[in-house]
Length: 429
Image (cartoon, rainbow, N blue to C red; front, side, top):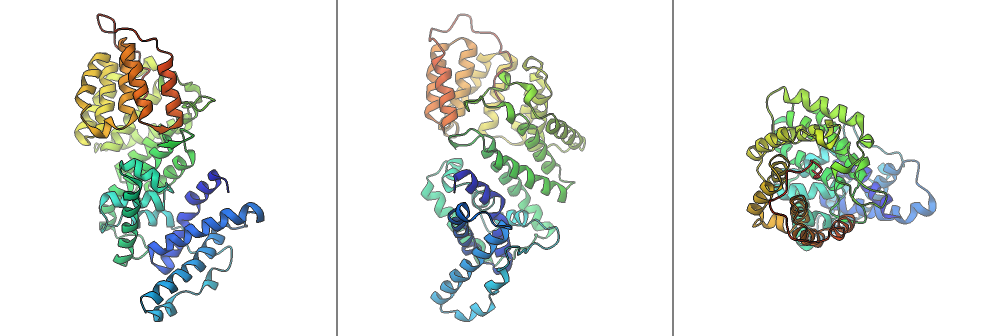
């Protein structure tokens, strides 16, 4: 099966199949292995035999039979064959239309909360959910955490075993437990969306299927918890950011800076929904990090032209965000906002203070932002080198091509004296 089809299968059907198996059998770790093998079987059979009428039921049936085999082997190894009598027979899943979702419950959402079990560390919660629900590969998750793939493999394996060892039921958590897990669930959804909006590697800049799944799950979460302002802010942030997706890439797949995008291609309906949502949420006067980011995104989306962007207001919001949720990425974006208000040299001064942070220095965005500010300041020689350095720090092929193209179009020469004037608002956010 071609990779896009396989990826779509995992993200749309596998979490539902996994939820059904965990609900019925337990054994999170073995259930995921069984679903993976069912997907492999689908990748071999469906291209030749056709997609069944109920793909979800087919996956559940095949995975359940495989899980039964795995459980029997496990019980035999542990000399507890008597437990096998408690298993639901595979005939329960024989019908391709088998469905184990009670009422309107969303198994994928319950799976999200299960993966964010308090027995796991926050890092393990996020990694396991990205793997089981988001469908990211272990290599992609490792890059997101800046650790070797082998390390991430061990972390995910331990997390699955820990879930099994807790004996946790596949059911919606109690209100108090839900409140404790909710921040991790939101963060996972945010990371899934981010990977879809700016893929860490591969031939394409975008993975729209991941964006769509993150938005879908966040809508479900918001519908279940309408009073939670940060969930509303997260949904608004996703809508306002995803609205720009149609204009973010050129026909050859290279990224287009926000200031150079055709704003007529932006999704007006998504912008309208996102602005209305964040406006209503901010009125509750409990702004959190996701709400602040959504407010920044709304200011970008509401500007008819790059020159109309309210950079002073964006800078003020980044000041609040630095207090509410300080991080290297927030500091980087704050430096950009300072550059747009006070001039590129002011932004470069702030970047200099961030240079020692390995979390930024090992990624491409710090060097790309520095290159753009240097170019705005007229220091094309340093900008040329910074673009090339940024290209060396990304595994994304579109970003590599784009950064090399930016470097190639610059004819290096010494910086002017005096320094350049404030930018024109075209720096991508």
